[in-house]
Image (tube, rainbow, N blue to C red; front, side):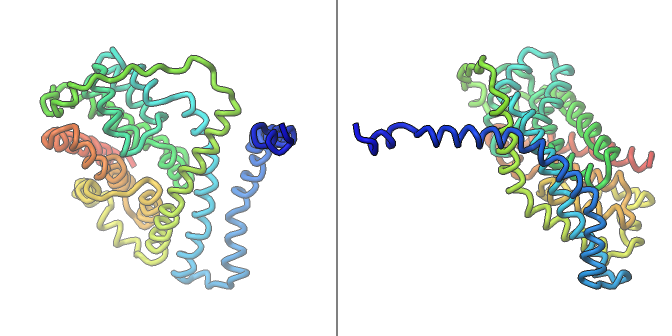
Length: 359
């Protein structure tokens, strides 16, 4: 066999050695980048001030300056946090899969199942397009309908993008409050739906499907592959949401720089009792992901909107995804969709009123 033919059929030793070196580099690269990320995050505000006030020589008292500074500071801050957390969550999610989640929930009683489904919804990969196969797999496996809905509520509402943005823009307390109240809504709404015995509103053909038995590989995945899962998550998620982050922060910057504080306080403040129902009513038909809506909510809060009203608006936009409702219409009937929206919206309003009362 000629050397040329051999090279076509088998990788050369040089190629193999190069691949191994690249693999080792990608394995240790996150540790090397940690101090770089930390330094960038610490000195970001100082660098923003130098750029805006010294290099661009912008007027400190101008509304335009406030808006520009807000945008220049918040975009890289959020993207830094998002990249780091998505990488870590990508590794964690490599230990889970929708099929493992389905098997973990099989045979669980209603309330315990609601709690487990809501918790698993946070770490299980989910998007609107996966709603139907997940729903069919859960229902066919005998998982109660209420438990299934707990998962479908928690998965889109409490995700790493939302938590990272909340932590970066508001701090850990608000991120924790959002996560805990989101879990409470997912658990309680799923429990209520389960108690109402609404299985008759599921399309009949869903129960006629016999889900194939899927075997979960028993072999342990090498940690290097889990690191690759982190890289994949960053490439997939950050590449998709960065534009929404930029647009959301741009809108928030406009609100931050130009909207009078007393205007938002009168519209979304504590004194306006109708602000929470109105925020939910407006938010339900809207569609945006966490990346687009949370920066806007931050700006609203800074201009006098109350925390409860803002959280209610944000949860209704993220948690009751309009595209997901359209997709689910293929497997459940309209009365169940309306009940689902009503129960979740009611829970969101309770959270909004409660936070307005406490804070």
